[in-house]
Length: 181
Ligand SMILES: [Zn+2]
Image (cartoon, rainbow, N blue to C red; front, side, top):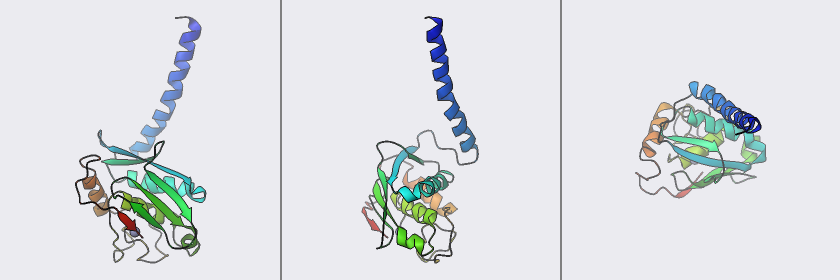
């Protein structure tokens, strides 16, 4: 191997190692993903106004669950779209695949977009609506009203999602495929 080849190899290794170092820093402040955690890819390219909110909503879930991890990556099974009117909703199998629609009018009315996205992601992770719940729950959705800005799932919600993905992609619950508002 010539010196030029070695130099190129070292440069390539450095480029790979740097992002890994960053990921380790991020993991230190969040839940450690289990070694066999299901990695779910989402694609928010059809929601151009909510890129940062999509990233934050996924990070919020990742910080409290171990058996599943949401990431922006290729071959996405969760597609995020923005729409106008009709309310935010998701059409999902309840186990990692679906389409999320965030309603820009609902956001204009004062509803927090990160909370909306985290709520709809919750449906894709197998959680039903619980509108009568408090603001501290993500699945209470619009129940507590637009003044509720909480975008973090509570401990019970996180535990249920971990249970839903305890067997990886294998569904361990009845089919949940439907449209959730
Ligand atoms: Zn809902």
